[in-house]
Image (cartoon, rainbow, N blue to C red; front, side):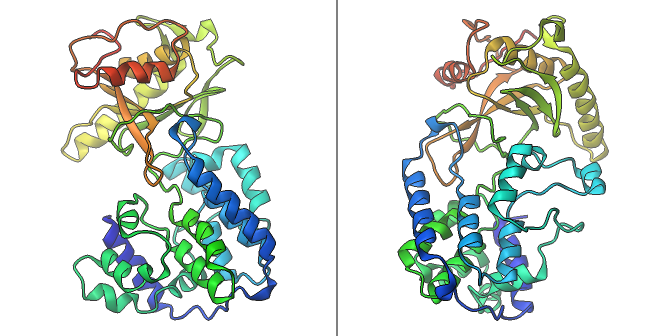
Length: 388
């Protein structure tokens, strides 16, 4: 759904529910705690570079700060903040859609429990944002419905008529976001400043929620991504995760890695050498994708999008990507980070079956970052990693 259409749908719902009725932050908030969290987030945002290997997402830090420092935070606000983060799916939803990547990680779930004590353990079965959260978020722009009905670009109309007044971000930052949400950040600043919180304290907290890392690819907590100055967004291909402790597909471990990120030799077979269990898994997935595309009268793209820890050696990465290649994936891309704090998650194609020249010079100890650097150096030519 286009971003403007999504905004129209959500905010029409907000307005239909009426005003939220919630009051400002008042003196009940621990202002010292908010200021400390705000300053920490601002420093983290300003100091971020792709070389950190992590995405610049401070949304949970911001939500946690307000959640714990403001006893008067309305229930609707708590529901809205909680709903921004992945939760474990019920058994029926997991069977239908798979497990959310971060919500299958014990480390993230433990962090969520600490950050938002007492939060809901699962999201609603229907996946819809709860009414109290919608009502609270609507308080930032009560005239949203009228503004958007009069415009062919409701998202821009929303900005011009409401959001720009808060001075939270620039217009181009709003329009360049990949996320279709983020209004929680504006609602939070509105609530905090109405309650007397210094706008300079509220702004970094709100921005962290606006730039909430709602990307197509969500790297696991323990993965450090490679860096590359490329422009292709990471929004296509069947996802695969490599390391640092395991090879994972669809939220489950396919093969374990040792402390140095290497595979047990018994797992690697065939020519080219590939991870046997991963080949079996991906071949089944490729057959399914091909069948689904045929039913829709189209052809499967054969794309894989791989999230790989930047320090993993080629002795692990090579057999893993070879498994994808042998299973029928004709285009394999790695998730990388570029110097764009608003939209940093990009993709770099490292294997294109139509390319003529193979990439040479890779050894067992070549890391993912070194592979990325080598591919970037030949970006205009296209590369292939495996023979036809």
